[in-house]
Length: 204
Image (cartoon, rainbow, N blue to C red):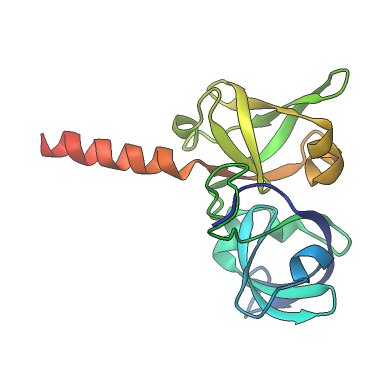
């Protein structure tokens, strides 16, 4: 489990394709001194909001295997050597929950639709896939590229968030241009509520 509070901006330093055909799987090497400081094989690290398992650690970098399902559902398949990535280690039970409950299980890909600059912040609009829209509500939580954000407004096919200077400076969201891809994870509590209500109605 993660909280959506990015610990550092890492960098992809290597990509190795694997499998019988292109896009079947990949092995990423990511530089991140903070998250590798106490990392070991088998640990979980969120890379742009995708929970990956550390397969090896070398100095300030770690390797992680990415399967086809993850490549298809997230934007990790579009990364190249040199790409910046948001990194977060799995939360400890004793940690403060600074964001919200984040699983690192990406629901869908989206893209930046609009950026409006304010005096010290930006309002950013992202596209919203139709099958995810029912989980997104005004003032609710959503994870964008691993960053826990509060939804400022929502429409049928998009939503907006406000990015403060810290988020703009310390995550990839500050440099994402119009059309840039992002990973979305809806609030898992909304999914469970929907499931429970659906079953209750079916039973009634």
